Length: 145
Image (cartoon, rainbow, N blue to C red; front, side, top):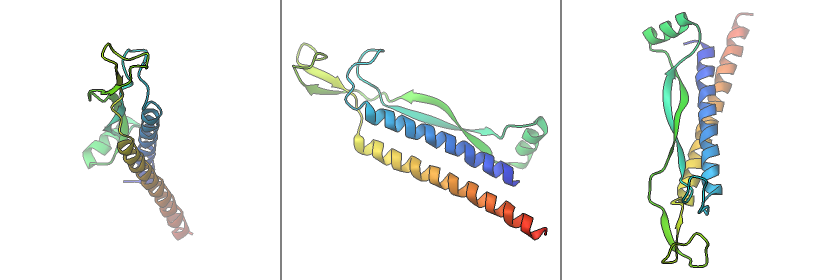
């Protein structure tokens, strides 16, 4: 594996974790949203990650497949959480049903904070991997002097 593939793989991980943090932020911002354009309460969103072959020239992709080289991380999809909404009694709310219950998003602030911390740590790990790869290249260049 060359240094550039390592950096490319880590960079794809950075992009994926950044999107994950954006989705967590959106989930937290909409924890009390009872009405969406689609109708009903906001549904929590989460990314689905997938490994894809390192892109580039055909010969690079073919060699990567033959030699078991690393893959990039991509967001394959963003899915809505299918958990049922939480029914909260609030007869004054304009979104309340006939019995006075309002359908609230089923979002756990604690769960979202754990997801944010996990995404942040993964992001930091990818930054460290890129930094270490860069330092190895610099050290290799010093050897050649």
